[in-house]
Length: 322
Ligand code: ADP
Ligand code: MG
Image (tube, rainbow, N blue to C red; front, top):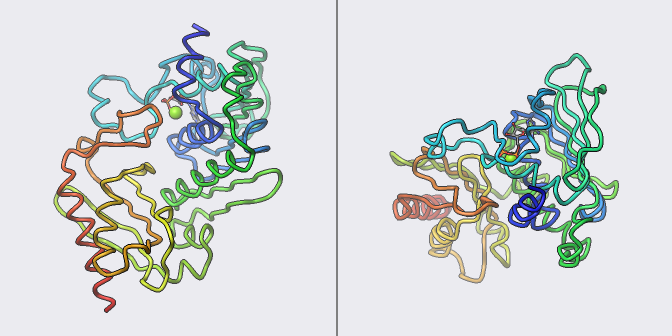
């Protein structure tokens, strides 16, 4: 069982940013309105995610760290209309297999909470404590018991880069959640949770960039697009400034990026790229998120239609500026 967990961990937990991603997505799934992420040394020694969400009942706390103990899917047909970010029930046990994990959670505002500590898969504390409503998950010394994996970790700066990039994009995906990221005591990101995506763009890319964005909105019977793209005055040298969000999930989609750039490059030089945030809503049945454990890649069942919609929307918005 411990070995199975370590093997599963290899798929889910590639590096510190994968831990941050799984914990933050759990916090989002728990309807949190604030999520505070604190890390040290690029997340290699310390990652803490504190949320004010639903919390975990005491009797469910241990089960949450068992494999396939998701509370998010109860029938196999649920698999075809996944609305929550997590659904495999693999993240917590995988993380606990390769790190020292402390979880404190409370489901109400009574101040009463429960705390467990699991180190390399072994339970070392299980007791009542005091904490506000929500969940605090701390992950220390990632890969302490899998030295081969630890050897593959890059510099603090590289690991921090992955975490910071993920946090920026999840903040763009969830402007209604107040999100902070702190590294070695410095605040790297703070959003207000007002629901205003331009505020998040300002927090990440600066106020002057936020002022250069134009709103996108378009829809057809299957897809609804909203978001922002930068005016021709504000271009970037690479495509890293493009964020695509599908049903609340930050994803990597070559198809969507390509469509957006097709539209953009009919009016702008091909060596320039926009700052853009594109949020796409669709019925979950049109989307297959079960492609890879990291869930970053997805498949669309009507990809050509979606691409045409994105391309036309971008071309029209930019064309209108002329
Ligand atoms: P999954 O997200 O795929 O269900 P996880 O291993 O990530 O699996 O989490 C297991 C379960 O623990 C979740 O289904 C959820 O019930 C509970 N859980 C984890 N993190 C939180 C959190 N921050 N707030 C509330 N419940 C949580
Ligand atoms: Mg999860």
